[in-house]
Amino acid sequence: MNDLVDQGKPKWNFRIKIWVPVALVIILCLGWLLTKYLGDHASDELRLRGDINISEMSNQLGGELTAAENAARAMTGSPWIAPALITGSGPDIERANAVLDRYNTAFGASVCYLMDIAGTTIASSNRNSPDSFVGKYYGFRPYYLKAISGYAGRYFALGVTSGERGFYASAPVRGQRGEIIGVVVLKKTIYKVEDDFARYHYAFFIDPHGIIFLSGNKDMLLHSLWPLDEEVQRTLLESRQFGADPFQAVLASEPANGAGVALNGKSYIVNRQQVDREGWSIVLLSSTNTVTEFRLLGIAITFCLYALFFGFLIAAERLRKMDISERKRAAEELQRLSHMDGLTGIPNRRFFDEFLDREWRRAARDATPLSLLMCDIDYFKLYNDTHGHQCGDDCLRQVAGALSRNLKRPSDLVFRYGGEEFAVILPDTNACGAKTVAENLREGVESLGIEHINSPVSTYVTISVGVATVTPLPGSSAKVLVSASDRALYWAKRAGRNRVEINECEKLSDEQELSLGPNDFDNI
Image 1 (cartoon, rainbow, N blue to C red):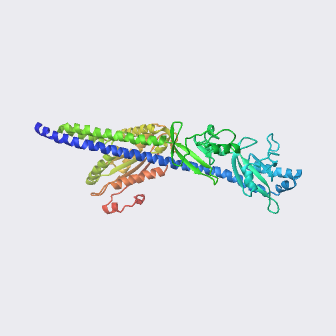
Image 2 (cartoon, helix red, strand yellow):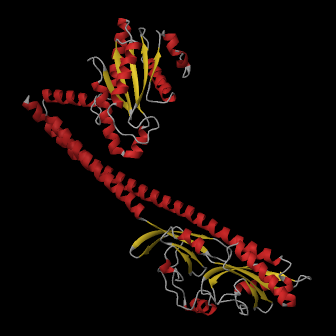
C-alpha cells in the first residue's frame, strides 16, 4: 500500500508544477480584465450621471433666461413705453415707470429700466433707490448695442452700478413707423439658479473664455477655469463685464468633455455642455473616487481568487493524504452541512426536496394523507428596511426556533424554504390536524413578541400560513402539493395576513395532475 502511495507522488508533483503556473497566469489575466471592466463601467456611469445633472441645470437656467427674454419683449408692446421715449414728459415717464414696476414684480426681476436712443436711462423700477439707474449711461453695454441694432439681447455681467451678478435681457422699442426709438431691459439676479449649482462642489457656468459666472464653490466665482492669454484678459478687464480684478486660473488647461483633470491633488471627470449660441457652457467636475473604488474591487476580487486557488490546493493536498475512513467521515459531515441552512440552523431547501419526495412516495404507497405548510413572515422586507438586516437575520433565527419548538412529533420537520419563507412537512396528517398545527405555529411566532412597528397587521412579527393536504396516488408528483400550499399561502396574504388558509386537495390521478393549470387551485 505504501509503495502505491509513493508511486502516485511523482505524478501529483508533476501536475502541480505544470498547472499551478498556468492557473496563476489565467487568474492574473482575468483579474486585470475584470479590474479594467469595472473601472471603465464606473467611468461611463459617472459621465452619464454628469450629463444628466448638466441637462437638469441647463433646463433650469434656460427656463429662467427664456422667461426674462419673453418679459423684455412683452414690455416693448406696452402702450405706455413708447410715449415716454417720444415725449419725455413727466406723465408719460410716470406711466412707463408703472409698467416697469409691474413687470419687475411679476417676474421677480432685480430691476427693469428704459433707455433712450442715446443709451441713457430715462425710467427705472429702482428710481427711488440710492443706486437708481435713472440718468445713468449704459450705451456701451453689449445688451444695449444688440437691441439698438434691432435684435433681442442677452448678457451676463456684473452690474456697473450695483456690482451684482445678473442676467440682462433687452429688446428694442419701436415707434409708429417701425423705427427704433429706445431699449427696454430686464435684469435678473441669478441666486435662484445658483442654488442648483450649489448641489455640486465643482459645477460652473462659464463664458466662452472660461470666466466662472456661476459656481457651486463661491470661492471660485469670477475666476477663469483655464489660463487666459494677456490679450483676452485685457479685453475682458476693459469691458468691465466681470469686474476689474485679474482672473486667476483654476485648472492648468481648458478641459474637454469626457476628459480627466486634476484639481487640488484629486482626479475628476469633466462633463461640459454648451447652453447657448454665444458659447456659454456648463462644466461639471465629478470625483473619480467611485472609479478608484471599483478598480480596487477588481483587485480585491483578484486576490480573493488567488486565495481561493491556494486554498483549493491546500485542501486538495490534505484530501489526498486522508485515508478512506477520514474521507468517509468528511463526506458524511459535508452531506450533513449541505442539508442545513447556515443562518437558521434548520434543514434547507435542498433537504426539503429530498425529504418531500421520500415522504410523498411513502404516503402514496401507504395511501395516507400528507400535509405541507408554507409559512411566510409578514412584511419582512419592511421589517428589514425599518430595523436593519442584522435584526432581520436575528428575526429569521427566532422564527425558525419557534417553528421547530412547536412541532410535537419527531416525523414533523420544518425547513427554510427561501428568504423569509419556511416549509413544514407533516407526514400522515389530515387537513384538520394540519390546520391545528398551523395555528399553533402562527400563535407561537406571534408570542415571541418581536417588535415590528411598521407592520400593517400587528405591532409584532407575524406569519401567514398556507396549508395543503393530499393523499398521493402512486406515480404522481409532489409538485401538486407544493403548488396547492403556495396557493393557500397566497389566499392567506390576500385575506389580510397573520392567518391560516387551507387548501384541502382530494386524490389526483396522473391525468388530473398534469392538466392542472395555474388558476385551477381555486377549484381544489
